[in-house]
Image (tube, rainbow, N blue to C red; front, side, top):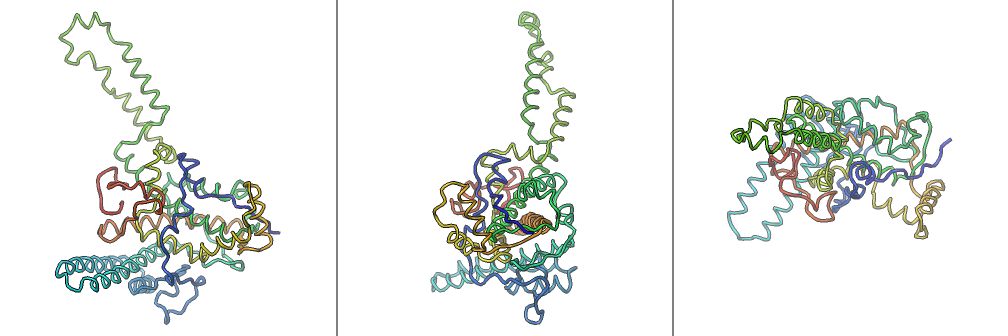
Amino acid sequence: MSRVAAPSFTASRALSARYGGEKINTKCSLRAYPRRSGRITARAEGFGDARENPAAGLKAPSTPESPRGQQLAYILRTSPEMFESAVDSQLDALVREIEEEGARAGESSEQLVLYKRIADVRALERRNGLEDIMYTSIIQKFLSVGVDMLPPLDETTMLKGIDLNRLTDGVHSKEALEMVREHLMAVLGGAGENAYSSQLVRMSKLQAAQVYAASIMFGYFITRADKRFQLDRAMGTLPLDPMESAKALERLFNSASAMDSIDEADAAPENFGGADFDMFADSPNANAGASKSRSKMTLKQYIQNFDQMTLAQTARIVSMEGVMVAERQTGALFGSIEELQREMQDAVGMNAVTPEELMDAVNDAVSSKKVQTLTLAYASQRRLVLEAVAFGNFLRQSETYIDGYNAKLLTPTPKGPTGPPGASLRNPDDDDDGGNGGGNVPA
């Protein structure tokens, strides 16, 4: 017997409640930019005629529509061993186009308006192609861990079981896995851990879409944070936790109290060169203790040391193409988020004053099917969340590879309150390399 699940998750809680204090609106970040109509092609899992579309046959909710994306999808389906070299070839072609476009821009100012329109069309085509390159790269990463992506979801969708360990052990580092588990429990609640995997839960489609979008953002965030963590640990620059910092100060004060008296110091002025001040130098034991403390620091503790600016910068998608790919995936699975929101607003109305009244109104809308719903087993819910977190991880990997290939390719997200989390806090060195510069988009 199915039961109605009240919304149990908000995107901001995943990051701010545990790692900061400033509310971060990851729930809305994937819809911060204008949508392009007609760019999403949703297909049922495993369906499609390869004669009509070279990208058909890939088990993903969306298929590439640009010529570059279709070519890569065809290679991925027929000759997967050649996929990575094909990606490099497509990136090379895009770089050449950008350089040729820049050279032509300085040749003549005649017919400037017409030239600008042509240049805008070509830039849009390149962006569409680059998004498809990123999306097919993400599909390839799911295939490499042996997992088919979810098909478009509706009330009648039946999902087959998979080995969920492939979405965790094969994707995230050991340090990140614990935080992924915490995120999963935060989304499903305590009942999700103990419930039978066949137990069904009904939820609104909007709720499921928001959970999926927020989990993409969480996967993206944890991947960026983990890279910073691994880099700081390798360089020995991990911060001490507050308890260890207090102990270090206590050791310093104890050392100071053990100094010879001022009279004794005055009696031996020749020692002011530093011989009697060795106690202030870092002793081997002190260094060893600090290094041991740093080596024990967990990724969660590391993130808890972030200030609000660092937290916001790490939590945002840093390229426009990445934003659009995340939005595209969510829309392909659940449909238009805007339409689902309007549907929920019409069903709930404006009469709810307290959170409890709003929750009751949402539950009533779901139970009476005034809004589109999904009925999923707990195992399927776990798959939904873990796939989204893995998608965020793969999105960041793809974005990093493209930016490392050539910094001209990706479009940085604009500054201002309408961007993804932290967009208004962007600075020239907002990357994961410890302050060593980088391209236009954080690597």
